[in-house]
Image (cartoon, rainbow, N blue to C red; front, side, top):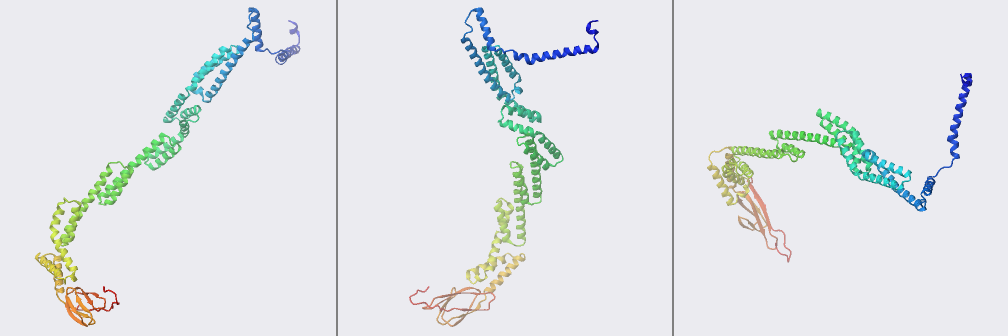
Length: 486
């Protein structure tokens, strides 16, 4: 048993504690006190000493100021290249180069690390070459940034097409890091951020489509497109539903048009077909339907007019029938029924027109030519033999009228015994205070004249129902001296 072992346990413990305390104190001295007692060693001093030693050994002028200047210049050149390299490194890191060219970027950093090692060893010339190599690598990376941008834009667009919002957001975020002002990247980033909301709206829209609530589906798709006007998913969904709505509305309009056409409602049918044309301007079915409306309208019009013309013939309304046939031929000059009908009614229509003219112009029958023409018309009516009630009525009316206009009525002319009176188509009466004569019913004109007075003109009518007509005619408007008579 040694002495320490012979000590009591508590004394052994004291010795252990003392040894530990001594070690701690020694460590504190080495760390905090000793460095302040030792002068720092300058690298240039070491280099100088190394050169001095070398000079002593070789007995050469290597420690000359020229050598020092060479080293200083090489170090400065290395630092200048390093400065360019660091600037370019900052730019590339701002563009997140580690995410689109990690390996090439790490190689450039490794080259720079080698350059640092040579720099620390004061091998400035070699350090220059290494820094220059690293700078060239970084420059090449900078040149590939544009292609990296194109790649990220393509990846982002593909992710949008695959409905992968996270991948799209990552790609466009990286693209914006490469080029913060790139419009496609900005738009793509917005699209990526809105994609989840758009997909949710599209899902709801498809559910509405399945239940034939197309207007509601369109509203949801419009909301989706409002979130991102460039979204091809929203654009396609909205385009599809609008095409469905167009097809449905077009079909409805065409069906309504044909229904109206079957019912002979041509204007309504045309209105529906025009509405369909507004929905699909280039659909070939619309012009065909409109032509069908026109054709059917014409055919219906022809049928109706032919029926009306035949009805007019049956009722002895020859003028009406003839006019209907003429209007039909104006529509289609090849209509056989209209051609035959016109030929059949021409003569009777002309006779009816003369009869109506005679009956309507009773006061003109005092003229011999008109009276003779009316008599000839009556002869033609009589020559038709037995006819319908209208023919019989016309014969009776014209015969009675001719009898009435053949019976003269008494006309009393009153004057001043100074005025010379003449009645056109009758003769000169002269001057009188009262003169009585008989005239057939009709319209007459009496003219009075007197020297020194203005002439007077008096038109009077002898009516069919008049028994006596009194006419006053005298010149009373004296002409002033020097004026001319009118």
